[in-house]
Image (tube, rainbow, N blue to C red; front, top):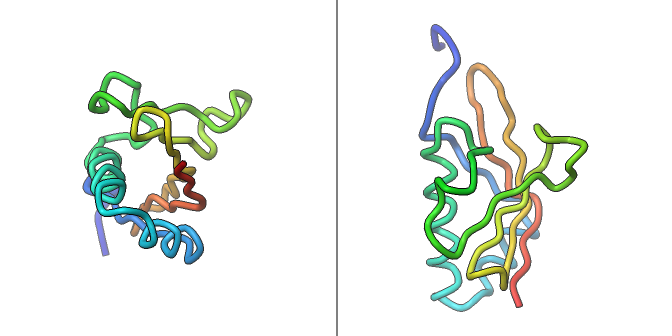
Length: 103
């Protein structure tokens, strides 16, 4: 048991459909996704400002009316995106990737 809120690196969990889709993508795209996820899991707040990400990535709320709700991480210069939520639990906070798309 922990004495308080845990910090990064965060756990990352993938919904089964998103995981299967990710695994079917070309190797280069999977590496790009891993690079973006590495930034998310090591950020103090996974809903970080845009300038925290490498070139080719963009982060924004899925709905502007819910700034602490699901977020969209665009990768591969906008050719793909993944939607995730950050579950703020005391004992095991985690990032849950709910959906992924690449074209």
